[in-house]
Image 1 (cartoon, rainbow, N blue to C red):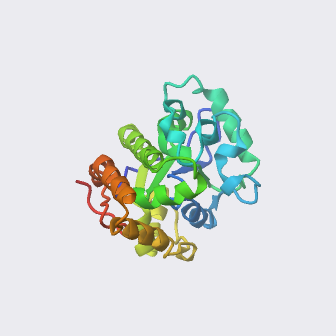
Image 2 (image 1 turned 90 degrees about the horizontal axis):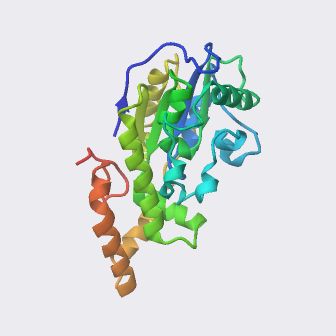
Image 3 (image 1 turned 60 degrees about the vertical axis):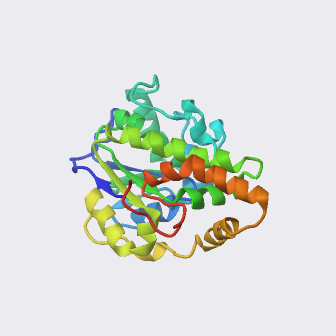
Length: 275
């Protein structure tokens, strides 16, 4: 899955900062947003957040304009609450919000750099809102197989059902897909492609942003899905009737929706052209 829209000139936030180009990275927890953003921020013309003491150096925790994902349940849950999604119709849209975000995030960016990157999982369902504040901003979305993301997220949220964490993945991505037609500068990649062909995928990211030179591919590590692939395979071959029932329900409810994003329940290691 990949999608790149036409490039534009300098970023012109509603509240100022026209000399900078803003890049927002979005993707579910456990989808590879952190290594992707670190690779982008390693470029000499880019500044990202680091050593902020905020969780994963996410910009959502370094501002008070937007509610954080934790307000709506955090990992594995935030997209289930419709209030978490923000668009250009939000009452928060305005020059004051843009100025406040730039001021709060600017404390952690190196403003001598031309490109400023911020990543937070809720960006996935807030692109229209962020574009309303920063009309020339660029957006990069990374997706990862819903089974891998859901199994890994479930470890963080043991009290939530598997159906809940799966549904969270699909709600977020279906909202993102609906919103994507409104976004002027959007580049989409998959975690599976990033791991399989890091240099090639990062070259596409660099070109989309308008950077010269390369992004370091050594920040991307493979093999991070193997334990979840083994768990899924064990479930598929299990003789336990309760596990069989769980698998049948998950397949019936989500396999077709997964295919619309290019993912199959019988292949967790790669993405495919969407059905």
